[in-house]
Image (cartoon, rainbow, N blue to C red; front, side, top):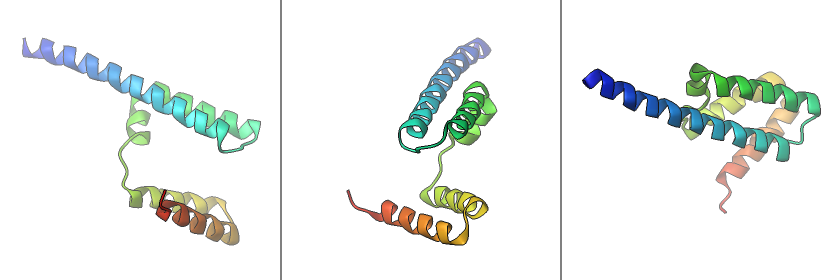
Length: 104
């Protein structure tokens, strides 16, 4: 009986997790489309990655895990360091910190 109950609860959790992942993917695609001002090729590449995330539970756990502000900043710095020249990186990171510390 306990196994059956656990299977029922697990099925409900799986449905909620999949729904949440689909909502998050939709939101990320909207941000990419409306705010990032990317070229069509780059936007399509991001869309393909997000579609893989939407379909893969392991990727969902990795992408949608809870991150602290320091974790997000660390990730952004790693990406900026690997993709931007020093001057662009300095400008970007200074603007990011200003935005994060800006009072609304």
